[in-house]
Length: 77
Image 1: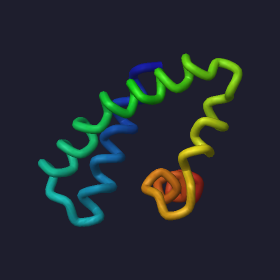
Image 2: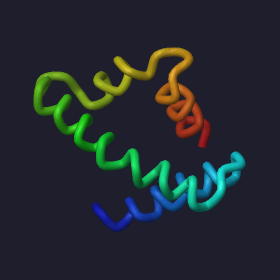
Image 3: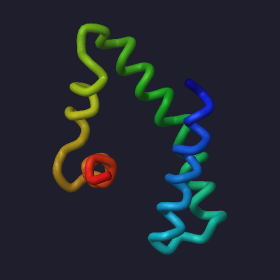
Image 4: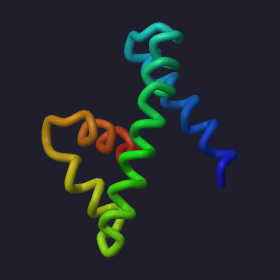
């Protein structure tokens, strides 16, 4: 499962550069937030094992957040 993740991160970095960030800024943004994000996701999932990952995501993807905006982009593809 790990191999496809490289392509996902690459596409995410490219999306940020397409939106106007420099390559260095995009790399820093994606890689800098990845560790914290994964740690938070894992902690939430372990703390609430009866709650689905989708439900956990919906709980934070409220209107006006970066989470909601990112989800909208992903679902449009």
